[in-house]
Amino acid sequence: MEKWFSLSPNRLVFDVASRLGSLEGYLYAEEKVEKSYLSGWLKNIDAEFKNVPSELRNDITEDYLAILGKVHALLAKLYGDQDAHTVEVSRMIADQDRGS
Image (tube, rainbow, N blue to C red):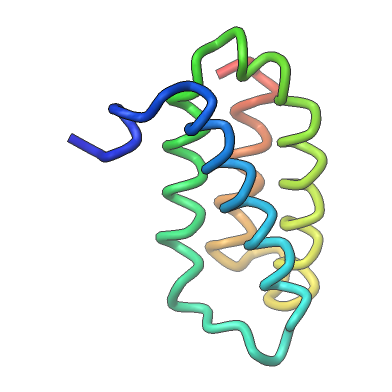
């Protein structure tokens, strides 16, 4: 069982926000980005966000999508639209647009 299944809702929201915000900041360091970290980072953000209780998730989805959009733009700038990480963030955004 993943550790976030046992976290309180508030702690889960905090973890998602801190992971996503730190990823955005990390990507601004362009030349210092270690690409091998990105898959796990994105996987954790996606899984944690999906485990936030729906009422809380509804409250933060707009902000979540805004920051994901920035992450997507940074990844596209660094690696292009067809890069696996850029495509993964596109999927994460599309999942929320569909209400997943």
